[in-house]
Each structure stands twice: as C-alpha cells, then as structure tokens.
Image 1 (cartoon, rainbow, N blue to C red):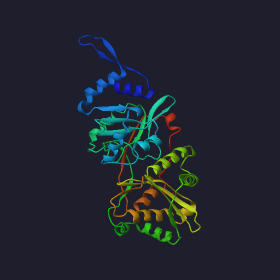
Image 2: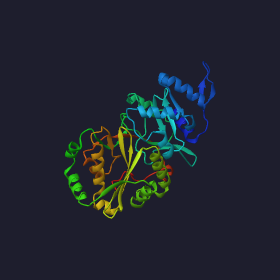
Image 3: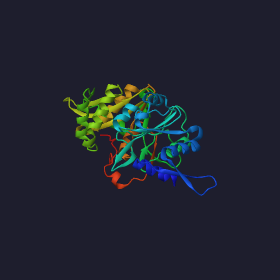
Image 4: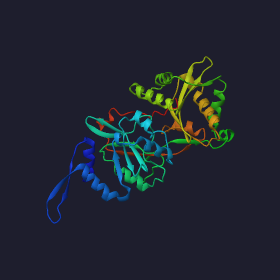
Amino acid sequence: MLKQLDAFCRLFAIKIYRVKPFIGKNMYICLPYQQAMRQKSFRYRKNMKIKSLKNNQIDYKKWDECIESSKNRLVYPYSWYLDVVSPGWEALIIGDYDYIMPLPVKKRFGFNYLIQPILTQQLGIYSAQNIHKKIVKKFRRNIFFLSYEINLNYGNYEPGLLTAPNYVLKLDAAYDEIYNNYSDNTKRNLQSAYKCSLQIKEIEDSIDFIDFIFSVNKNYRLGHKIMATELIETALQKNKIILYGVYNFQNQLITALGLLKDERRLTYLMPASSEQGKSMRAMFFLIDQIIRQYAGTGTTLDFEGSKIAGIARFYRGFGASNEPYYLMRRFRPKFLLKNKHYTKRYNRQG
C-alpha cells in the first residue's frame, strides 16, 4: 500500500503522511513524506541507497563523467542532450554517481509522469560497473511515479521486461570484409545508386538540414521542429554530430542524415529522403560511404531500430545484428497518451 501512496504523492507533487505504530500501543504518529522516504530508503537499500535528485541538485560534471566511463555509454544520457529533449529532467543515483538513471519528467493536467523523449531511443541505468539485474530491479522499484513509459538501454536486462529491436554494426573489420557480409539485395541497390552520379557533402547550415527533414518525412510533427533544431545546433557546437547530405547531378539535396558521434559509437539520427532520393537508392549509397570511412576503426554504427520489417531488413542488409533494449511501462491513461510525443517511430529509412 505504501508504494501506491508514494507513487500517488510523486504524481501530484504533494505531501502525504506515513503512519508508524508506537511500540506496545495501538496508536499512530505521522511523519512527513520526505522523512518517511529517507527512513524507508535507509532500511531497505542499506549500503546501496538510491537518492532521488531534482534537476538543480544534479552535479553535471560528475554526471557526464559517469556517462563517459560507462560500459554501456550512449549519447542520449549526456546532460547537454537531456537538457534539450527533456528540460528539467531528474535523476536517481547510487553512491557518488556510481550508478545513475535519468528521469524524463513531464507534467500534464497537474500530473507528474515519465515519458521517453523524442529522438532519444534509450535511457535507463549507466555505470562503469557491471549492471546486474538486481540493480535494474532496485532502480525500477524506486521510480515513485504512478505513470511512466521509459526505454532502458541494452545493458539493463531484467527478466520479464519488454524488449525492442535495435540494429548495430561493428566496424572492427576492413571495408572489404564488411562488404562481403552485405545482402545480395543491398549490393544490387548499391550498384543502382553508383550509376546515378550522386555526391555526398556535409550540410553546414542546421536550418537547411531541419527544413529538408521536416519537408520530406511526414512522421515528424511540426511542433517538434524547434526542439530538433536546438538539438542539432547544440550537437554541432559540441562537435558531436555530422550532417550528411546526398545530392543529385543537379546539386539538389535528395537525402539527409545526422550522425551523432563519439569514440565508441556512431548513431543514426533523423534520416530522410525525397522521392527522388528513394528511387536513386541514395540512403544505401550514403550508408555504404559511411561504412567505408569508418571501417577498421573499432566503432559501432547504431541504426536506432527498427520494429518495422522493411526498415529492419534495410539495416540487416549491411550486416547489422540485433542488440535489443528494454522497456518499462506502467499505467498509461488516455489523457496522457492523447498528445504523446510520437505516434510512429521516427527512425525511418527515408
């Protein structure tokens, strides 16, 4: 019962009271909510106490250092990324930022709840230490929000969690070896693309990139354009993204892709193609060139999905394998789902 009351309290951002019996008497005293939570945390978690932090309590330096050293490092949980896609995000931590978990908090009709932000495939728990399933369970049990829908990451296994596919390609080998693992269909599409006199250039203006993406990919909502623009501009300032464009023989942009980058991983972001780009197989051409560039570097090309059979086949065609991530959901009422961040996955081939 206490867990339901805790969740109710966090949802409405109000104080509740916890009752505790006097020894030897059938009477009760009341403790303030925060004090009760501290006592519960101390008794239940002992040496692995989980702390809940508001945004202004988070040490961004320690946070990013934890992400940087994490075995399951991804770009999404860095503080600069979260500040754009989920302003006011909160956190759960163990120790001195030994284990951390971002909480993408939103408020609607007075309800506080958690929802996976757009352009953010995986969040969850990060650490330089091994993340045992007991750690995942401990964090999950400390999410005191009545309603949540969160994607954990590929390193957050716990029995019983839902899974979603994510295709990745290890770029350890030389290009020729990787190419040999392409499917016959991918090789045929590349042969067609190479006959179209296509050119690849970096798109220098983020506005040009965003305008193209939103003009040809109808899965994006115009209401997200400001946020997407801020994300791209912030990533460019931090040298964390490359904006690729494929141009036809008339120097017209027909395909675009953002590639988030760090030493370990290249993440496929906001791909889109015009009808001409699709007919000329421009995305096949672009991905092949990216693989040529990074083959042998030991990095991983992360395709960001997908559950859609045709898109998954496109990724597998380059030799990518499934590295699933995990999902947590609880109590998703219709009034919170009505204006959900997305209705379809945004990781389209284009």
